[in-house]
Length: 81
Ligand SMILES: [Zn+2]
Ligand SMILES: [Zn+2]
Image 1 (cartoon, rainbow, N blue to C red):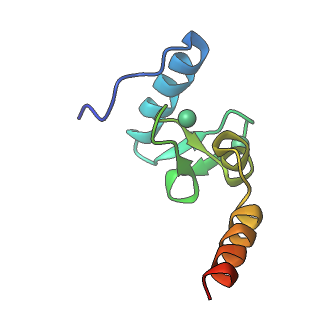
Image 2: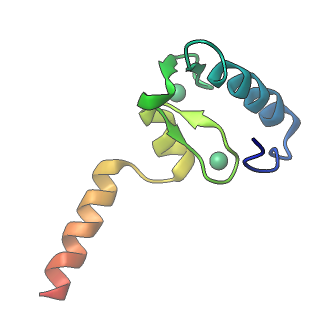
């Protein structure tokens, strides 16, 4: 299956290819860029570059922690009332 074009950065391309091969292995355990290895079920996949991330790295990659996001939503909800 061809989900998306590979990312442009050569380092990221190599990382993505490694993750892609791992995700298609007998057990879909993928290595995050930080060195952790987790089941893809426990990782977060970027819509844009296609790489999987553990939660800590995903928060950095996506630019916001889940706590920050929840706080923003709470503030919005208060404003809407
Ligand atoms: Zn990305
Ligand atoms: Zn990580």
